Image 1 (tube, rainbow, N blue to C red):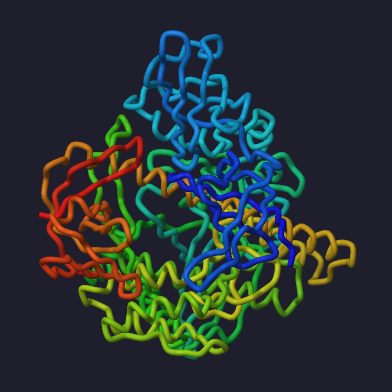
Image 2 (image 1 turned 180 degrees about the horizontal axis):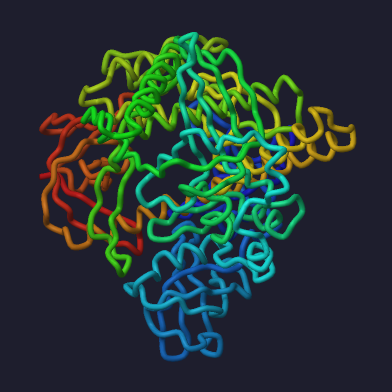
Length: 637
């Protein structure tokens, strides 16, 4: 058996880590004494020192750090008279960075800085470095979000040549191309988005046909018409992969000159689009479809809230009431079809974090969802499926959104917990259907345990990603799925638009050379877009954690009701009604020893026999909150 492997080290704030190697499914555990100073993200050479057992990972030892993944870290500068240290924000970096006096620059004590490592840690010696940027004091407006930008090395500003190229694009449609497009400007068509949305890339319209079927038109901004292949804009978009939303700021994939300008489907302005026209029967089945280059002119920009109010109040005086009523009818039909197919409806509310003009968190609450959010989602899902299926059968070079069947081991682990509550995910190793999950999710609707089970189901599922092969989408119970509807903010969508345009322009006949080129691109861009998406999700999650901790900092001593969301070997996680989550460590749970049952995910007091279970209501007091460490601690009351 091969003893040496190369892989990426994934550090833990307690000093140990794991290494994922290509040849094996399970990660290899590396104890604190065997990391050989590897830092999170480093490429390492390891050897196996202990085989895996039923109750534990196989164990390894780092022989050599082959390549450091990064050499700049964001942290807090701690200044002494003749030297200083930078304590990295990233808790997975277990070494402070020593800064000699000559390398401190103008940094002051307790400022947030960016330090570049000049000597990596070795044995008992700390890493050494120099300060290359001062971000400001920790409580200064915007420093927390700027720290994240630097920590993840995000491309915050667009290079000047990219902006120049964006500015050179005319802000009105080219008249010479109009005759070659399906003209839908006289048709009633709407954008329906959040109230503060700036880049409007999808517009919808629903007609009722004489045969009783519906005609759903989904028009998406024709971004690839403006972002030409191999242009500076295109190359920059590939690097970025996706727009990143950090509460009070967006790091966009495309410059605002495009995303808020000619590529945004603004009310009353002619815009080029790619339109998917779908005839849908009374059962929600797409019985025929077509994709065309089009020109549209949005009748009215609407928000989810406005359309919901029109539908709720049966406002028949509104000139568009009958159109929105048709939309609602069709959305309900599509939703019912999806439900019968086994699509998973997870009740996991999103957080809405309200910031003041200085960027300080002043409120955290559940994001208010309307039926009209779902209405648009149903139309987008249907368009995405229709496009994916069409181009799958054309055997076109393509990027699919893939969500594979979850691992049986994870399902068995979930079932151990569900069994205690009287539920079970049914199925065998070779036959797990989304419907098995959907049935349990339907059964728990409205029950106290709904939120918790939804979260556990989400953790059991695999992570969706981009691939150039179609492997279906388990979560929405779909055989063919892609991302087509957001080319302003996701590169796979932009790439798909380009492929569709090539097929339309060449009467669905591409040369071998073109097919080969786009096939190679689809593989490369699927991989890079998946990587960029992971980073975007981490950044967005970190931004939320920072602001939630900031919001709770002045709530120390206050009491709340919450629900136990998770139980671990070191404490109990509790989620409050406003979506804030905190940890109750065992010391703050009660004055006794607690016994942790890993299978049932329960805690029991040794003396009192008091039992804590996931989903239980619990009254807590806030005892600690710190935005710097992104930590919130509770105590049981």
